[in-house]
Length: 409
Image 1 (cartoon, rainbow, N blue to C red):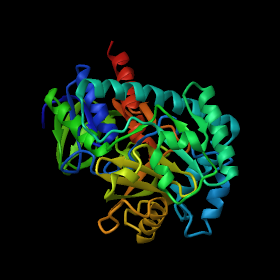
Image 2: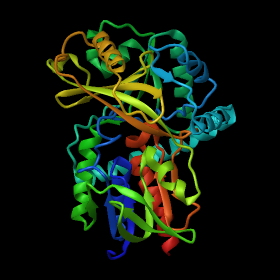
Image 3: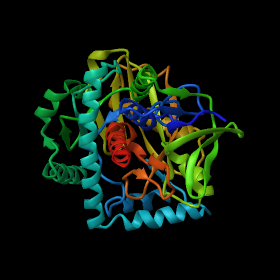
């Protein structure tokens, strides 16, 4: 049996690495554990790359429900919802519906935006300290709308975000072209746009792996290629983890940053979280002509995709498949991303060398992640960030570490 570690962090994605880094920086002895051979090789590997602090609207809303109903009957919809004989899915759906009331929506949006603003400041502080080169673009995010109805909804969302204290506002075509001149080369027409000047983009995988190296340099221990078999617990207290089906690693505290695997890990402890996997896709392709490919990150309301420049490459990500724990790559989804990308940029990209990817996002009904102590002593959560893991990772880690620090005083 190994020597006790102060804290074990399970999961070396973008959320887990931030959590381990902040804990180590604050004087804890931290062991970070992941089943992969490096950090950020799962859901953080090829995400949409947006640090979308001003675009954190919860999915659960009266506005979203018609799109989900339509998705039950439309295979080509950006949202694919398949009802299954799965109690967990039905329980999640009922919770999701409860979170869609106007009152709950406003409450969830305020919490998410507050965490996003905190996360932005934490991320900026980290970057000023560590100077990580992660193909960052601190040029904001443009949200494009293809119909006037969608644009009016976008204006409403912008007003709400502005009223809550974060800049997001509509822009006319002249202003849009001054923010991102390359949009005038796109053959697509738009009814309007909103702009978040303080949003950003960058390669989450590159950032996470650099932060993980810094965590190790601070004295942290990273156990890669180490699958977690179960949590080690006794008398309603978590005592550590069991890895490789036999080795016990003791700790005073365990933090789960395990995304969609969280429900399975905690089930033997008699507790649960409402997290359901939502599959997303991305393509990454080389840029041939940089002069006609945008630097400002884009969100396409019609195609439900995001577009981010990562140095010499373009990342395009989107779709949401509610199809359980299936991790297989659906060629039709990749085809849809390629088609919409061609509509945006018929030239300037190398469509012969496309890297496709898919991953499972851990989504909660409210959109707000689980951050803090579980009902089991010594066990903590920092999980369930959905599509906002990259956006909320620094702030979530700060918040969790504050809670743990309060306990140790």
